Length: 219
Image (cartoon, rainbow, N blue to C red):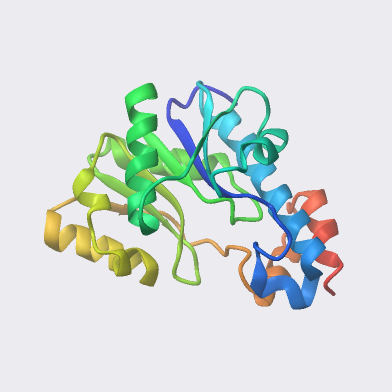
């Protein structure tokens, strides 16, 4: 399914052994965590191509990881290094680059979910169309899997770093109280951060086969 309309930006950490999914290493090992990170990035990119009519944008960390990410996200993706201090600074820089190039609305995602769905994009776009300034997709452990914006929002990414690191409601309440934004909240999803998340993902009959194969090694 194509043509929902948004630009998509993936905030991706390169799949390097010992540097990704560290909390899952006792379960999957370093090599398994590397494979899982690679699979999640590839699936996030496939989802992005499905919901966006334009090129997929990938902001990567570390800065020299472009070639590693290229093989996972395809030849048509637009890659550039993440730049800025902390989560908020990197989001501010990356979102400004994409909005300047592609316009809005913009969906920013982290490749942490075992399965992104078209419904995630539809829900965010519906909230933006209904008048929300920003839409947040909360992970159950307190992080974010998606941020949707319809236009540049420098005040959003100027919020204190701790608001982004604590939990999604902290970001939402700070944005509402301090900036006056209308905030939409998507359904909470379980990201693949901890061993309990692996067990929950394996209970999903629609879990992608390659991800399931990697996760089953930890049983």
